[in-house]
Length: 356
Image 1: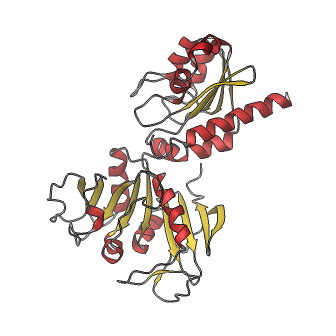
Image 2: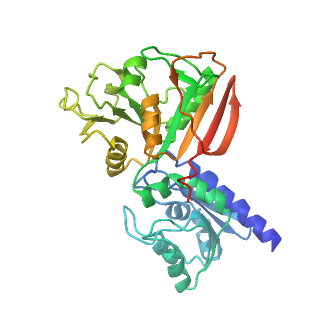
Image 3: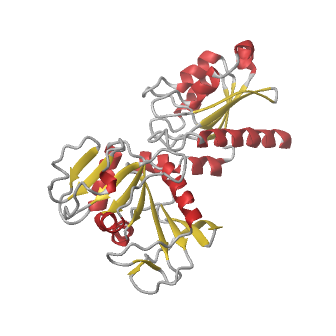
């Protein structure tokens, strides 16, 4: 029994590794990995590559070598998330499992989507398929944390990120200040590549004129989201360049940007003086944006904190000695990770009020 438990964890770990390859490409769907194992030997592996494409269960079946396809009914299917049983952009994966004749399916966690949520397990069992659920559950839940927020709270997963001096200062009004180690920028751009969008406020655009790309990491650049409540910006800033990346522009007033008709700019009018964060997240979710990094500035961070609309915060603590200026948020949460890059200490916190 102990040997089997270890084997299940081993193969499920491989499912997680495969699923991670889809992060940044499959949203708003969850990343999922799958392997087929025959008598302790790997038969095939697969994962969900991109939104709208074949799911992991379909991919793994397609990847079985032609000369070994007769072994599929005798193989065990491991999958990181409960297979779907509903029609979406692709047919139900449960149908493909049944058609393939697989008799043993082992799953990390149930799908949090109420339209699935255990129904696939019941269906497979109804047709005599042996199913096991609950293998390496903590890792399974961590893998789909974005999707869980999307499906249960109908909004994107939100990360706040900023750098600060050793005295807790995150900037100076009207002046660009570099805090972090150059190697930290590579880590930051890798994080961007794993998210659907990156959000900054008008003051950050005016002061830093950022590109908001992943130029320091080989991944696709996220959509850019600009919060300009007073309509101060114009189109000469880098965030509005025509590189094909979608730019979501939010303002409480109409201006040249919102009326420009520029192809990559999706302009949206905010209503009232309160609740802007909820309006932004609702509109992004409507456009199938599953995750957003809020990079600045401090005013925008405080808005999301005040509205308790954040799931994680990543703080880059630097040795910079700046002791006056814009104070970084004083945020409390559950420590989820801490590591050092160059001279910087990076600390990740989870919002304990959002943990279910």
